[in-house]
Picture 1 (cartoon, helix red, strand yellow):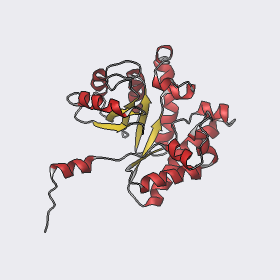
Picture 2: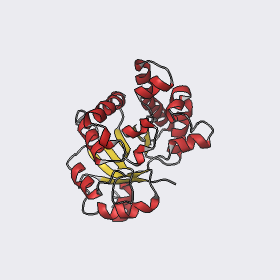
Picture 3: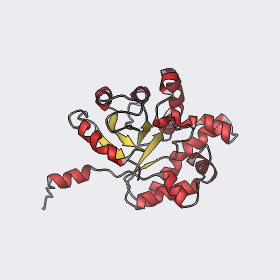
Picture 4: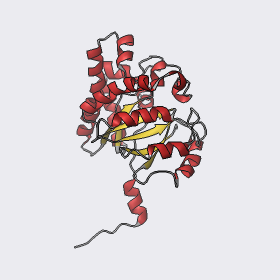
Length: 256
């Protein structure tokens, strides 16, 4: 019997998971996305779900170990306002983002995780405030919680493997999401932030505070950055050393 004993480098590579790329970028390149639509990719999910599945498949075939659902810009409020559908219909459309992702995984024949994408509250404001956190002081924790509970409930009921709490501008909103996650004890999530310089969130909290606060949540299995300039990553990684909790990993997916 031969027993494979991998080196430390090989073991480290085994621990690395490759995320998918920008879904809207893929849709734009392949002619299926109108950047001016307030529903953004959520419009494609509603009207042309087959295009979302094709995009998932392209990422999976390129080597992705995780695909995120097309639910970042999807909200009951958004669908009711911009697609003139009922609340019940809006919830079904949001849930279908999981169905489409799972169908792509099944068709690919690969073992790929489906992450339920949850955007910050600022994404529905259509003012780029997910990159500033300007709404944080005027939005209560209860408002944030009420907004996020709907999509988390819908995606959890559809059986996502984990959640992707993405592009958060502040620790305040991340903690609201972490508390909601406690209602689903079998599920885990990563939290990724928009940031100013690799050392602070867009709202201005030092990442040392972020690591300390989120380190208390064992369902949060990774902390990192997304939708950011690549030059901010180095500073963030340096801060992560010695501050990231033992049960958590780094997750990084910058622009370009």
